[in-house]
Amino acid sequence: MVRRPDMIFGPVEGESFPAMSQVAVVLAAGQSTRMRSRLPKVAHPLAGRPLLAHVLAAAAAALTATEVPVAGATHEEASPDGEDHSSLQASRLVVVLGHESDRVRAALDTVLGLPGYTVATQHQRLGTGDAVRAAKAPALAAGAEGAADTVLVLYGDTPLLRVETLADLLATHRRERATLSFITGLADRPTDYGRVLRDDSGRVLGVIEERHCTPQQKLIPEVNSGIYCFSAAWLWSRLDTLAPHPNGEYYLTDLVDLAAAEGCVLTTVTVPLSETVGVNTRIQLAEAAGIIRRRILDDLMLSGVTVEDPASTFVDAGVRVGQDTTIAPFTMLLGTTVIGRDSQIGPHSVVRDSQIGDGCLVIASWVEESVMDAGSRVGPMSHLRPGAHLEAGAYVGNFGEVKGATIGAEVQMHHFSYIGDATIGARSNIGAGVVTVNYDGAGKHRTEVGADAFIGSDTMLRAPLTIGDGAATGAGSVVLRDVPAGVTVAGVPARPLPPSPASSTSRSVSEPTPVDGVSEPPAARADAAPGAAGARKGVESAVEQAHPPQSDA
Image (cartoon, rainbow, N blue to C red; front, side, top):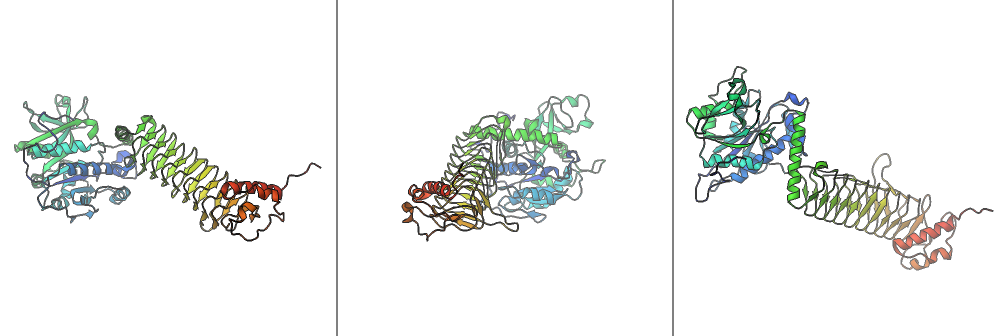
């Protein structure tokens, strides 16, 4: 950004300015046929948000950063000419919509934390001057004590505008007590832009569109971005004086010439042209996405996050990452994801709209709308579907899937298992190939597994089902009925095994039913112990006795 030496951000120390209120008018009514899309241009996603949402966020932040409050003022919401979209800033942002406005608003409604805005409608697309005229009524209601003093006008398809740029424009406009201020850009070979005309002293004389330029004027490198800051009283009184062009449209650029002709104070702020360029094609959309994402990654790295390979890392605008977390290559952090400190995400991972605590590990896995508490881990090649919750220290290994389920603290679920619509108690073990059979063809049912349980490999848990604390299942079991605390079951269908003497005193279970009519021998009972580890030994010995290997004889 190019500033004169006397330009500083905000008011100068010791210098006073009149109390002012500000409103931003965002023009987003265009159809943009060059996008070749049925979706309105400003609703296209860019780094996890609709294109227009980036502009609204920047405008709202700039208004907040530069506002000089009116004494005793409060922000009352007012939208006599449009729809009010809540929050204290609703009356300070006016969005002019036209083409498929319902779809644009629906896209904005998906963005969490979006600043409030008021909608004005441009019923016919008659140029930028007509679009601002459509915003007049809600903009006049934007001030704390009536009309706003300053009107910022920008476009909904300019997502690369920085908050600092808009804030500098507003502050410069106020400091210079200007009637009209606007952003200009410098280009080596400018095309399709109006050139800024100045006299020998640098005073702005006007803006001339390229099609009207002389060969010498076409060589002027300074071009008009179309982003303006107006004295509100002057703007509203001059809009109605604009004459239509031969195509029937009214252009805001004519106001620059008018202000210069009237001898008004005009000021400019110059930034790289790339920051003010509009998105009109999908090529430009992709280019803008690359710039936005690189800014996001730079901000993360400056805040203490390690990004091992920025070129292969994609992070949306709404994502937050804690200090000393490492993001490995080929990782995507999307939506409203929040990640704590000292975690490692990736490589080859996708995390969307999820909450991940401190010290977590996600390796080559998908995590969607899920929660991972501190010290939990998932992967490689696993999937946490919406509603999954890994409590502290839980471990989901390779080729596992969790959906709508809570995996308790310190649970071990190492491989090839599906846990859906379930709760797994703390410190339980989920063996390879365990499946919660939660769907019966008509509805979903829950499975509840208590603490310190041992679910053997290839166990099928048909819901609805409850497995008590310290219970266990043998490998290959199909469990159709609830299992009380401390009981071991095995078989198809699973039946209780006799308790061992070591655990019978600690388990309040009636005389068990033998598996397949075979009683458990004393030797099998002797090596059993309470809890998951003991249950495992009991299962191994009891099932071996119940199903002895075939003799060679």
